[in-house]
Picture 1 (cartoon, protein in one colour):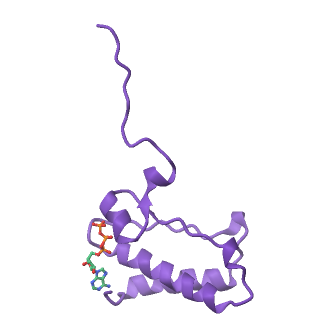
Picture 2 (cartoon, helix red, strand yellow):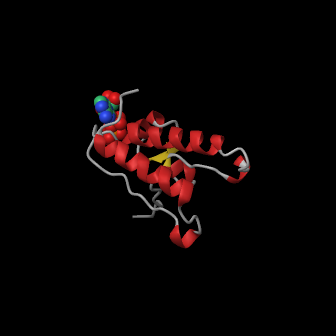
Picture 3 (cartoon, protein in one colour):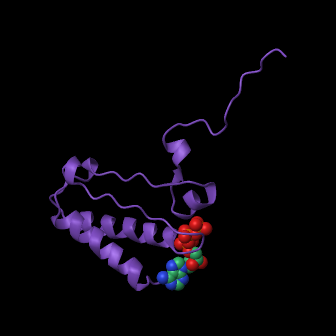
Length: 105
Ligand SMILES: Nc1ncnc2c1ncn2[C@@H]1O[C@H](COP(=O)(O)OP(=O)(O)OP(=O)(O)O)[C@@H](O)[C@H]1O
């Protein structure tokens, strides 16, 4: 895997600090939108975040891992595959086509 650039590393550090010391109540949970044009390193960043959180939680032996789950989603099949996730449509059970009713002319 490519080594992270400065921006990617900053985000991983920020998330790791929040996961370790932050308030995890729904109201104060960390909301992070990762966006950018194709090829800017979103998938690499998301994979790094997942690995970092896995290591962090694994290190906390007293933490019940069954209470932690991560839903990895992407907007396209390729993006989802790249992060080992699924499309957001599949995750939320959205139909992937817009069905139209056939009406009499
Ligand atoms: N920090 C980095 N250093 C070197 N190469 C990187 C870095 N981050 C990403 N890359 C490389 O850039 C390419 C695109 O990265 P990535 O697939 O993560 O982009 P993306 O934003 O998810 O793209 P898309 O929107 O098309 O899914 C990949 O080949 C990846 O290995």
